[in-house]
Length: 285
Image (tube, rainbow, N blue to C red; front, top):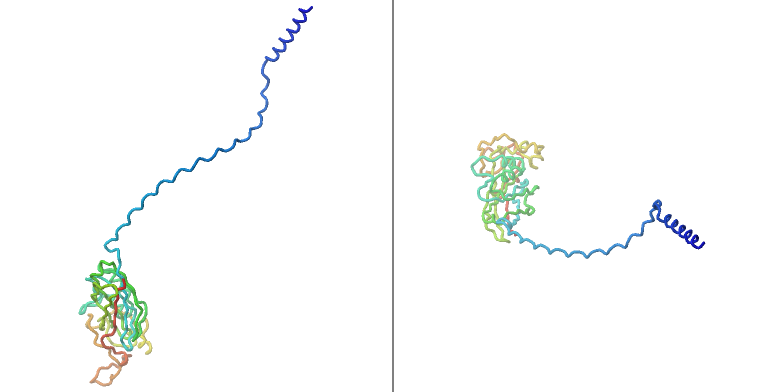
């Protein structure tokens, strides 16, 4: 009896073990994800690299430094306004005009109509050109114009020339100024003064009529204006630049023994004596 009970108990135990060791069941659902771990600490910043050394400043070139000049024009006439002036600094070799030679186109336009732009253009096209200014306004009789500033390389201060041209507007083609005046080697603070004569451009006959002059004298007589300025026809018999002999006025026009022109719109007040202008150049740097 006891053996039967023992065998039965043994069978139950083996049966339980077989069930436990049978085929695996289905895999259960995935469990929820675990929480993220704590972020790791940032690594220490790397050290900055050493700054590179600055390169040495380049040396000034031979023309690196500048010489600075001011130029001021005074009108010394009684009744001759000056048109805008061409003021030019240049080296030896350039001449805006030459006594006894035909005027350039720039001089013709300036002397007949008062526009200095082409004179400056001609200078700029020359290899000797350094700097230029257009004064840009009328300079009335017995008055001083504003100072104009011009700058050139320091190296060129030892070979420097000043050229200025400006029209006397109550004339056909008269102008005054300087022709390559020597202003070389001026020290800072030094000034030079020039007194100028009046030139005849030789491009227009000196009839002094209202129809052929652009100035206020012609305007007062019902003429003048832009149409009375530059005329491409050259009707002056000389056709060369020369010293001006003076304007012809209407005074004494009926006296054959004295100079006078009945059609002239100029009076004795429009006459001028030399010098007609004073020019001062000063080196400021």
